[in-house]
Every structure is written in structure tokens, then in C-alpha cells.
Amino acid sequence: MKHRLYKISLFIWVLPLTCFALPIEKTIQAEAPALFKIYKGFHQNPELSNQETRTAKILARYLKKAGFKVKSHVSNHGVIAYFQNGKGPTLMIRAELDALPLKERTNLPFASHVQSTKNGKKVGVMHACGHDVHLTTAIGLARLFKHHQKLWRGTLVIVGQPAEEIGRGAKALLSANFLKHLPQKPDAILGLHVSAHHAIGTVVYSPGWTTAHVQTLGISITGRGGHAAMPHLAKNPIYAAAELTTQLEKIAATHHKYAALSLGQFSGGTKSNIIPKTTHLKLSLRTFSKAQRNKVIKAIKDQSAGIAKKRNVQIKVNDGSTGTSAGYNDPSLSTHLSKALIPHLGKKNIMTTPPVFFGDDFSEYYQQTKIPAIQFAVGSISPKRFKATSKLPSLHSPRYYPDMPGTLTHAMRTMGHYLIYLFKKL
Image (cartoon, rainbow, N blue to C red; front, side, top):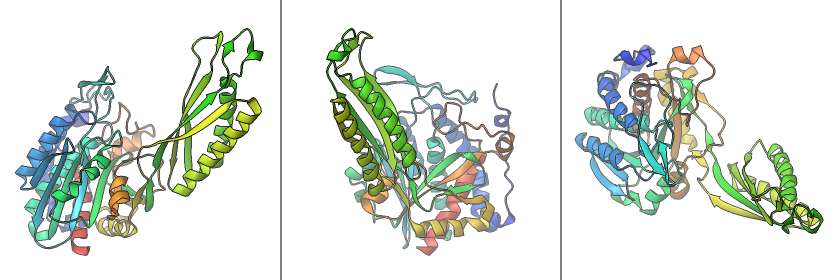
């Protein structure tokens, strides 16, 4: 059944009267219907990582129409745009272009029915992580700040980043030295996200560490293969792997306060009557510091060495590949966020949260450039739906959807007030 709320052309959200202290509020409300239409276009036409040709083209077109200078095709589909408005700080906003390989199950009237190919297989494609919201908000902010030039001075930069969902887009833009396309280096980099578990009108952030360093570990166990009828002549690597799996669970429990260790793949053998020579494990390790990471890896290697000696097999732990670096919110920008938004959203609606073990390549901008950065989330669930159930779909669920256009106006309002505050303070 189609959701009734989308028969309503405009979502009205009641906020404290202080919200209307700045003229941007009237503009945000006036732009809501047009932005909702843009949002639906993005949502209905999602593209997978490194395939974002249409999305990048549309973003670039809207930013040019807003008066921004635009450079397209940076590291394939990257879009770099800026608008100069006199002397002042340079503030950069990151917005992601890509979507997920998911078949949408929201039943929205503008649901995605797009299919694409991934690893040789047909897959559905869906914006299930809010990137369509982030893109539309960036377009709305471009229009807003062009219209209200008297309220700020400086340079506003908008970066349309490809391939966030596979953790490679930010690194690709940095490798391509995307900053050379800007008139000056940014003074701060801002990342907006949606929250699937907070109501519209709220803002959530983590002071300090915010997202995790993500690393894949590989473990190979080599024994001696043989016939299942003569196990005494073999060295079964599956038994060693099974024992190690138990120890990995204990390691995960011991270090759970600062690390998330998960066994995601266990493979070995081809037939029940064949004892294999090798067995392989793959793990995900998520931490916030190198010291934490090294401590967990040492525990894994120590347990592996003990089991290898006991069972007379070889166990090799491969530190594997790194996905994304740990995300860090600049303390000063965190303080500014709270001060900028409390007068407009109310103190109770500005929430802090411990860091999460999710990864997001927004972290690379700070880790590689040391430019102060902050990533925060805005609630995307209507108060009515938020109160009605505690079983809300999470991000990356085929059933997740942000309530519209309330989420867009809230994101615009939040980022708009924060940017104006930073242009005056930095």
C-alpha cells in the first residue's frame, strides 16, 4: 500500500519561534516542493558505486544553475563546485553520489525499480543510506546561500563524491588532488548524514572519534588432507579452525569496549568424505586507534600460534586490507555545532552519542589532509512514526525511507544555520 503521507504536498514541522530569526527559514519552506521533486528524481534513479554518471551530471547541472563554478569528472564521476562571496572562511560540504545493490521494498509511490549488474549478477539498486537526501540538501544549500549572500562572507564548496559505499571514493578524490580545483584550501569539511533511528528535528553527533577504522583479516589453516576413512593419517584443518573460532569469540568479548571483531566467512572442504588440506577464515576488525588494533591482532596471532603447535598445523594470519580510516570530529567544530543549533532546535534535540563501529570514508578527508572535519546526523523519521514503533528499519535496509519533505527541510535548516554560524566564527 502506498504511504498516505506522500499524498500531502508539504510536511509542516513546528519548531521554536527562534527558528524564524533568520530569513533563511522562509526560503527553506518555499524551496521544499521543488527540492522534494529533485529528491524523488534521485531516489527513483539510483546508481551503483563508480557508475554514477547520471547522478553526477544532474548534481553538476543544478549547482551551475545556482551560480557555482563546477568541475566535473574529477577521478571519474567526482563533482567539485564552489561559490565565492567575498573574503571569509572556506567551508566544504561532502555529498555522496552512489546507492546500494538492494531491491527496494518500501512500497513508496516513487520507489526505485532500477536494476544493474554487480559481479556479473543482476541486482536491484536503491538509495537506502540517505545519499539522495544528502545530494538534494547540497543543491538546496547552494540555492539558499546564493539567495542570501548578505548573511555570510567566504567560499562555499560542495563536493559530489562517488563510491562511498565501497569505501574508495574519498581516497580517489584525494589521490586526484581535488583540492587543486578550489581557489583556496578549506578551513573546515562538513559531512551530513541521515539517522534512521531519530526523529525529524533532532541532530546527533559524536565528539571526537565518530566512526571506525575498518580492516579485513584473513586466516589460513594448512594441515594434511586425506580420506575420511583414515582421519588418523591426516591433519584436519577444519578442527583447528573450529577451535580457533571459539577463541576468536572470546577475544571479541574481551575487547568489545573498543573493538568489534566479527567472523564473517568460514570455508574449507569440497566433499564430506574428503579431509581438506586448507581452511580459510575472514574477519572484520573495527577499532578507533592503532594501539587498539594492534592489541586485538596480537591476541589473534597468539591464539593461532598456540593452536597450530597443539594440532601440528600451520596457521597464517594476514593483516589483510584496510577499508576506511577512523573518523574524527574536530572538538572545536563539535562545540560550534551545538552552539549554532541550540537556539533553533532546542537543547534537548541536540544529542551526543558514543562512536559507532560503522565505517564511512568521510574520515579520509581529515586523516589525509588534517583539515578540521565533522560529520553529524539529522533525524529522518516523522515524530508520529517515531512514537508508533521501536522497530524502525535501519540504514541499508530495503525497507528504510526518510519521511518527506520533512527530512529535507530539517537537513536544510540544520546545515544552513550551522554554516552561517561557522562563516562568522572561523
